[in-house]
Structure formats: C-alpha cells, structure tokens
Image (cartoon, rainbow, N blue to C red):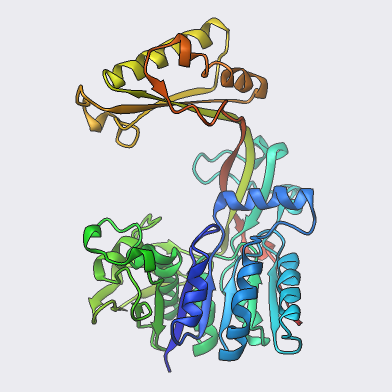
Length: 453
C-alpha cells in the first residue's frame, strides 16, 4: 500500500490556492497544512485575549469551505495545526462551515489540545522547572511578567489518536510541523511507537514537505532560472511505503521542479546537528538519507535511521521585549549612497542632541549592503538609487514615538533628491521576542476529542 500525503500550506499566509489544487489535481490520501511559526503563537494569543472566539488561523475556515465537499467525496483526511492557541474555536468554525454545506453526519473533526501551558507557567516554575532559555541559560523568572504565550511542541501521537478515533479533519495547536505528516503514516501503516527508523523516515518526509513549495521549485537557489511555471507551481506530495521509503513528487502538469537539488535545499532548512534532528517522536539522523532522482519531478528517499526520543519537549515562549520603529527614505543619483550616509549622520546627531538614548539603532543601505554587510564591498559611484532604512529599539515607547517624528523633516532639511516617504511616519510596533525552553514530557498532557458535525 502507498500513502499519498500532500502539503497544502507551509505557513500562515501561504498560497490559498495550493490546498484546492492538491485536492483537485489528482489522487491523495491526506492533506497536511502547516500554519504555525514561533511568532505566530503570540499574535494568536493576543487575538484570543481580545476575543475568546479567536486565536486560530482564520484563513482555514473559508479554505475548508471550498474543499470540504471534495474531501468528503474522495475520503481525503486533513491534518493541520491551524488551531493555534484556540483549536476548539477553529474546529467549531469548520464544523459550522460543514453544516452550511449540507455535510451533517458525514464529517468528524478531531481536536488536539494540551500544548498551551501559559496558565501553568507558575506551577511549573514552582516545581523547580526553570524553563531556561536554551540559548542564554537565563531562567524564565527573568522575564515572567512579560510572557505572552507558551506552547509545548506536541508530536504525532495525539494526532494519531484522533485519526484512530475516526476524525476526518484533525485540528491541533502547537504540534510539530513534521508530526502532521508522520501521524498519517503511523496511522496508515500501524508503525510501533519504538520503530525508530520508521518514525525517523516519517519525520524526514514531514520535514521535506512542511514548507510547501520550498522543496518543489519555490525559493530554490540551485538552478532557479531553469525552474519553469512558478505561476502554476505544484506543491509537494509524499508517496510513502510501509518500509519507510518514500518518493517526493507533485501533481502532473504543474510548474516548479522536484529534484535532488530542490529536496536537498529543503533538508538543510533549520538544520542544526544533522545527526540529531530532535523531535518529540524520535531523533532522526539526516546523515543517513539517500536521495535518488527516480524520474521527472520524482525523488526517491531511503536509508533513513533514527534513535529513541528524548524525555523532554521543546517549549516556544514569546514575550514582550520593548518597542521599535523603522523608517525609510530613498536617495537618487547622483551621489545616492553619499546622500543616504549623510542623512543617517544628520539624523543620529539630532537624536543625540534631543537626549534620546535607544537600546539599539540600526542603519541599513538597501541596494548597497543591507543583505551582505561588509562582504558587499564598496558600491559603484553611479548607483541610481539607495534606500536608507533606519530602525530604533527601546523599552520606552515614548522615546520610540519621538524618533518617528524626526525622519520626515529630512525630506526638506537634509540631503537633496529624496523620495519614497509616501507611507508617512513610521509606526511604533511592539517587539515580541522568542524564548526557547525545555519541559519534561511527563508534565504535558495532550487532550484529544472528536466531534461529529
């Protein structure tokens, strides 16, 4: 038996046509849609604080309304972490959409919760679990009053439980990106909880397709000029076998490319030690992966080995870290770069004279060295235009607000030939910072329920 798992979304904001095309473009068994990034959780938590019916990726509801009839007709099952910090509300909204489509009695929705530990932080700290920053070692107590969200990364098994309970659509909170693909494989093939090589293979399959078209021609550095049809790009599909081997492909007739090079680039995404890719479900060894071009837009993946999972779960914590504002001005030929540098000097001198001391001031010259810094070298003297982009950061909102009023005057009282200020005064934004931590698995209690529409 071959299981076909299609990637429909790689992040919240991805191409809304992709899931529709995956469902309608050919046979698939599962549709996996990944919506969550670290900062997304804090955004959703703020939304839920304002309205208890929010806190999930609302794009998923009109999307599901488009594809639910075909999903039910073809027996396709869906796994998605679109539930964010409010999977119940997301499931309720999808259920209501199903009822309006006349699907009463034909759809079951699984809901996975238990990842949101924001209300349990003080309890965990009281148990001596420091939730220390994995990068700096600082204890969470240093920033506890400013925490906005805290979510443990659940693995595939709660999703498996929902599928085994008959769910056609499984909506989760912070489940790992890879778990959304691994769960259908565990369920479909009956893999054991200690089949580490198989679980590692399913994890790597999930890693390859978790970012959508990034492995099928999108954002592809190696030979991108030869990638045709990106306006019609095909999102990836894993065709998996029970022995842990699988092929990565896409629907026939779609644009993009699936090649050893495109899959290899995705494998390197967010890669630390390739021998220890740690998930809640297993530890996968990326050095064992074997890739083979097995036909047009088809890459065979084999040889994967894995090891037992750790006793810890990663926790994604977001906290308020002050305020920022970023403004831009564009200077044009002649002497575009020199004008932009002089504008930066003038602005900094004025800010200093006003007694404004920021935690950080960052200046970038877009078109010169914003991306590559000193590696870009000295620019040519005849640059047609340069964008001055300057940002400030401070714990004092009023100070950042004062900065926003100092940029516009440069248009008439600074260097000449400036444009690009049509957006008006820079906006003050709250900074949300990331705090990765670890929590013992024994402290996290996933909850699975299945509701009938």
